[in-house]
Amino acid sequence: MDLGIAGKCALVLGAGGGLGGAIAEALAGEGAKVVVADIDLDAAEQTAKSITSKGGEAFSIKWDISDLSVIDQNVSLIESRFGNVSILINNTGGPPPTPVSGQAAEQWSKFFQSMVLSVIALTDRVLPGMKSSGWGRVITSTSSGVVSPIPNLGLSNALRSTLVGWSKTLAKEVGGAGITANIVLPGRIATPRITFLDEQKAKREGRSVEDVAAESTATIPVGRYGKPKEYGDTVAFLASDRASFITGSIVRIDGGMIASI
Image 1 (cartoon, rainbow, N blue to C red):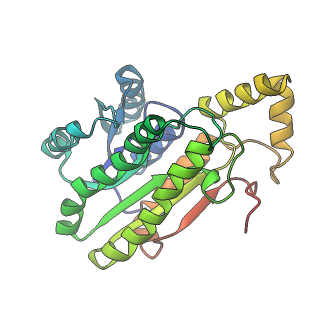
Image 2: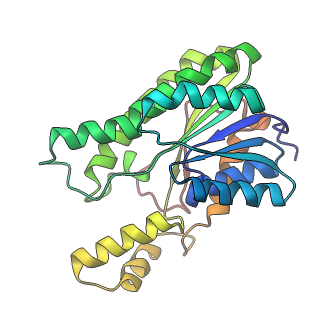
């Protein structure tokens, strides 16, 4: 199946590894020109090298998404090398595990800027280019906590839910311009982030990491953690011409784990 994205510029945030890296690899595999952005430049360069070693086209860029002042500069650099951004993958890091109550205002403000405001501001910067070409994809990776809140991930549950309302509203505003906006939710995908969360839970509860992982696996109908490639491939489809009638949606990539309807 030709996804119709060969030659299009894709900007992937947090692409130095994990879900972002898998998305970058999947898009490059379909012929997209990929900008690998990450706060860890070494990690971003590794992903870019992996793509180019397979014949893909990519370059890496250091990007601290909490710093709104670099958005215009970074996007201008991308435009000078690969043209307008046609595919934007909003993928931010998560806050530390915490209850939702009793958090300092400064903590809320810090993560609102890095997880929410950064996504909105970056999307606003690239939308004019998408509109001018009559084609665009805005895909935002959040968390299953937006539909089924996860205990002790209070900041994440609340702040990422904001992006769901934003994306749904954006989809209505830009649909007529050939632009789609969708949310993707990972279940238990085997990434370093999930390993960290399992380790934190094991520490809190005085259990082994293996026991925590086995307990989580038992809640997944397919009986295993997901593979990063499976996540990346789904996002690549949503970024494609073939998915032009899918917008304003929340797509779960979870092996059937998320309990809510």
